[in-house]
Length: 288
Ligand code: GRG
Image 1 (cartoon, rainbow, N blue to C red):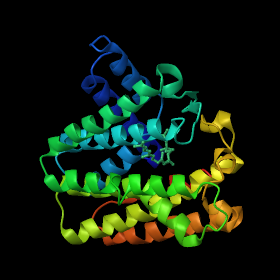
Image 2: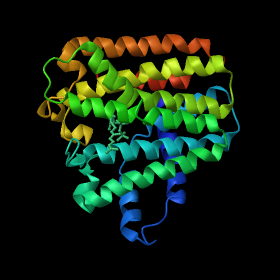
Image 3: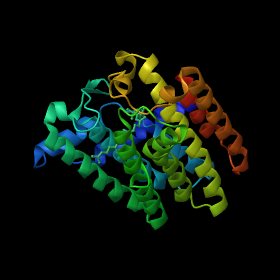
């Protein structure tokens, strides 16, 4: 199976699982359940879930155990996108090719839908009955992870003296922390040694940083139609991005090098890592 086929298979499994799990839009209060479903089923790639499942598959664990964990990660990701799009954050009108949640349901419901998804994600992840998985997620999305990165990102807008360390700090926390955690949570669900967990985390960290650099590049070189969101918003908000600090070509090289480094780590894991390698390459393919 190719990485793209794997990604599509994971997408179908995660979507089917979440369709069963999430309350229907007819349950009171209807609006919140409709809003949650609007965002969750708006067409995400499910890349983080696929990474989690592929990391798990390297160690060939009990098949059904990883799906709630992978689905939970996607709920966190969806919550972060909903909040990131709010007028008080990036103020975006378009996400995944559709009007953003607050445009359709209002700001108050969008905030609450994000909050609800955060809670639901922990409900799902706890089903693997391993506190280390829950703590890995909590650490990745708190003030030393995604939220910390988002705070630094918001504060960086309009600043002229952004250093390489600043932009790396933002990207590592805002985006790479959850991607790194996705790989680690997959490996933890399979039940592996500390050493393997460490190696998997190193792989995930590099892929995560490359992912955000590619996102920065696409915000300049791609189009609304292809990305399904408003391109050029980083420049409009004068954000700290890799292209702003390094220029486009050096950013491309940095992302490529990071994916290459990540792939070189993989043979240290004892198992078939070909899908993880393919997913790493998928990150960079989008700007090749
Ligand atoms: C709690 C008020 C409050 C705000 C939180 C956490 C947060 C705001 C924002 C997270 C930061 C963020 C959205 C980073 C961008 C990461 C990124 C590259 C998103 C796009 O990911 P894809 O391409 O999207 O995987 P799909 O649509 O495929 O799921």
